[in-house]
Image 1 (cartoon, rainbow, N blue to C red):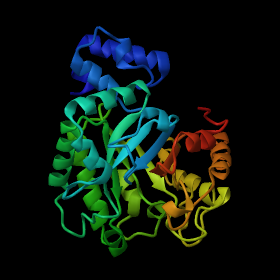
Image 2 (image 1 turned 180 degrees about the horizontal axis):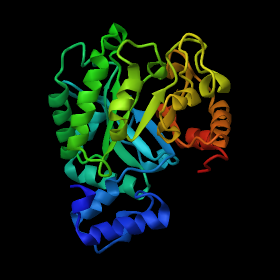
Image 3 (image 1 turned 120 degrees about the horizontal axis):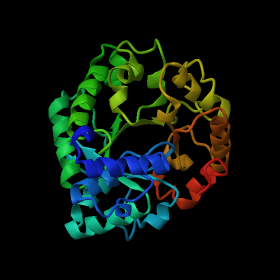
Image 4 (image 1 turned 90 degrees about the horizontal axis):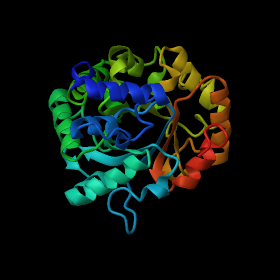
Amino acid sequence: MKLSILPSLVFAALLAVLSFTGTTSAAPADSFPGLDKQARDILARATPAAPHFVVYSDKGTSGITGPPPPSQVNGFNVFALSFLLLEGAWDKAEEWTQLTAAQRTSIKQQYTDAGIKLIVSVFGSTDVPTTTHADPVGTANTIAAWVKQFDLDGVDVDYEDFNAFDAGDGSAENWLISFTTQLRSQLPAGQYILTHAPVAPWFSPNTWGGGGYLAVHNAVGSLIDWYNVQFYNQGSTEYTTCSGLLTQSSSTWPGSALFQIASSGVPVSKLVIGKPATQGDASSGFMSASTLASCVAQAKNQGWNGGVMVWEFPDAAASWIATVRGSSWPV
């Protein structure tokens, strides 16, 4: 349902939330008891405004099926169950399906009350959808149906088909454009979150034969809520200092630091800094939480407000994000 055809009561409620908070996500749907269930569900799922603090969860955690109690991820506002693959749900995404409908409803309400969106991340390093000739439209339809069936707030597109990008023929970019267009048609903006998680080098201009993620952004960036940019796994010295992360990337991946990506036309509010929680969570690109906090403070002082993403819970939990947010966005 699009905003223009919402009942007048719902529209008025949305305007009230916006005028009071500047975002449709800050006030819970319970603040508007006159709304019907459909309208309340839309308000609960509404896309949050920047900054975004995103944590992925893929590894099994003793004693926890699905997401942890919200108190363990206090300070984050998006929790990504990983991964939904072409062949179906695995790991934390699969655990979500193993819960009863009542359990999912209860957990979802706890997360909503805590101001944390629950989304699913798709593909990851396991799937190479372009290389394996997956149909982008059919794949988008299947994923959207899964999100609706299991009552999640949206999708993160963790596309890592490196061979397709490296081919330089536009196949990766065109696949992503078709897939994103169809996925957004099934999961409307403002009702569902839709993010992408590209590696930072894919934003390097004049590097990729198909245009890289700048081509994707130019074509469908208006459909993507934000980018969880992976500033890691790209070389032992890449993005490991505040200057290399924020203002001047290396000659290996030129133009791929945060503000360089912004200078290529991507809004800073859509650029979320992604980092591993520990050295063991990635092959390179690790920063301590305190060092990352200093970079975050520097970036905020220069007008950035995108937020921070981390791979992964439980290595990063409430204490990690509290340190990273620091005095920039205190928890």
